[in-house]
Image 1 (cartoon, rainbow, N blue to C red):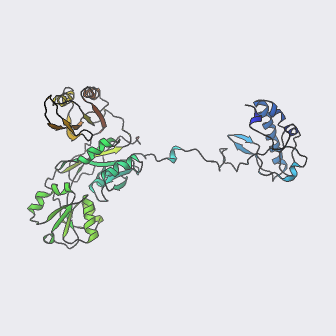
Image 2 (image 1 turned 180 degrees about the horizontal axis):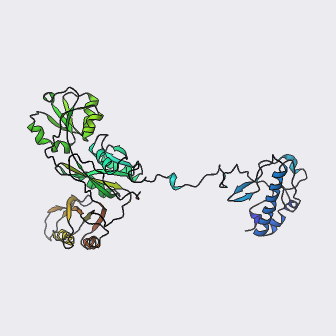
Length: 437
């Protein structure tokens, strides 16, 4: 494209008169000869700009008050900040250009919008370096302790519901989420299994946290004065027999979470109510421990999963666990038998199998050419097995499972938590998800 379509003479001027180019020594106004640029091509236009650039340099040397040349994309740009009225006395054409402000060392104008860089976004920091980890509950909850065990030194973000923790990671408010999925006494937390299927997060690790339940109340309250005990339903179930053995004639009242129960008792000054929560919750909310370790089983352990937006790369140099969910659209138990056989024939150990009703097809009508109205439930099956997706045997097993099922999804392949199961264990869980976002 010729330069004539890019640079135009001011309105009312004859382009032929633009050949009388001269520089005014005092005013800092630069006129250039663009006649060749108008009728010529790109080469002539570049030559004219080079001549203009040399005039700008000479002008700066002659007048200390003249504007310094500006740079655009590394080239000298003939830009002039001012044009006095005396500069156009002879009717010559003046090149009207937009001034550019002072520049930095890289040759880019400071007042221009800068390109968006990676650092301007919200990337996940390196593992354990102020990672933002979402958990369900309030400060002092067992989930907060699990988050600290999974990611030491993290910035723990409390969420009032499990689904809020999932959404916090999906919306980049948090980098990870640590949520419970099962307890050795209370069983599975079904809500989180349903949310794993509904959301597109990936399991990148697991934490097994020993649970130690103390009974706490406001300072000065005696056990004999208690009429009510509040805590999470799982915690109440895990301490049922001990509460009965203590001879407490109290009403069990469920609360959203353990630490929230302690906070509620302290905030409302309830002197007839105790709470079952962690020792950290007692410290945070000024509660006094009436009895320590009231769980029915000293081996009470809760398993948490670590969730991220991206999966980690499976490895074979350490024990891995893989979690999947599948469904089938055929009747009978033969399909489930074939799925389990795919793992058994390859010597893959299953650590968990959980069935949940299919949300979109909860009930199937049985039609065997009769007038029958029999119904049975449709299920989704959650399976955990001890193998990494980097192993050929696991890949072959899943390929065979896919042949028998109508739906198959890998929730994650992640390192197993190999820390000892002791009540005072606080070992750090090593995860391989430092590079994921």
